[in-house]
Length: 358
Image (spheres, rainbow, N blue to C red):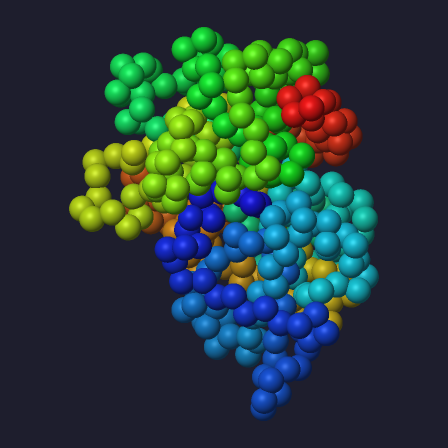
């Protein structure tokens, strides 16, 4: 990914990053025969040390975290290693990329405990249980409040607004071919304008000076004027990021402001769901199943919001006040059926690239 406000979060939260060698994935390791379970994931995975220690205490398995770049790169690696995986559990494939590892047979079926606490609409593989939904997030255009107040200009609210002359040369988006939020934003436009209209929309965006970066990190931290990570050095007051990005901007501010310095355009959002699955051929299948259960446990689910800045999928998980106060709730985000994404994703990306980048 990669991917979201989570990058910034990783710099200000305690993250366990135990990267094991590929030859020692799962099974027995370490002195005294302590058991290890290996979680293969993207660079933005984060969890409190105390939470992972609780898993070890409860199950006897120590978690080794093996990071593999952004979401797309990590998924590609999992596909290349199918049947002889790098670890036991994969976390971080989302609904925009899900069809590929499922079609390639990367995951083994397992129905995680407490799955009944997760809304059915998020269970995209409900019949076979090859993947388990873990979190959701909304990809949205974020805006720098100070810029628009200074210019006495209302921030954009809709996708249509972004093509207006008032917002010329203001928007930066990650590349849809190389970035998860970039792809999510493209899918939002497909959902809004349909197969016959989304390309014309992007022609208008291009004419209005949209800038494209390789990834989220560059777009948000380097080009966005409202980024704390980039200290506001960018000159673009509009960026494709997440509805949960505003809380990151106030995380270590004392005293905390009345509102976050960044806001979101609610009518530009696309809903993203991340999944985890037991890797077929896992060396420690039993430990992998225990870890999947834990990722869906209330303890882990309630730790996620301020670690990875995503929403838990469990109905009964409580979200911290900072997350709810400074984040935004998106009631009606864009969404596309996984089957439609699977059928058209590569062609959409190819067309988008020729239209916008080349």
